[in-house]
Length: 132
Image (cartoon, rainbow, N blue to C red; front, side):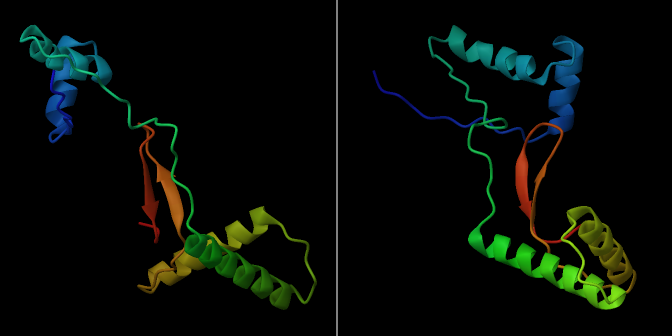
């Protein structure tokens, strides 16, 4: 028996959500499986893998880690200079200051490259370099 690999892509999230709400009590996974059931009626078998919550989560690259270290160290050094104190490393203060700096710079049309990994409500991850 010959096997074929197939990828099912959601190309219209609104249509899928409408289908899920109308026929599957809002359950997107059930809608995908239900809509693919017709394939199995033709003698084909469908195996679905859940890529949104796969075991492989995105990780920072070494370049991303180096950039984040550079940004965080720069903010820490700025705080020490401004307060004229050798402050303890405090992530909360550093990120409060960093977010304030980003906001001020954004108000002047400037952006800070501060790599991150964002996770949406469905568990899908993506790399981002700048805040939206």
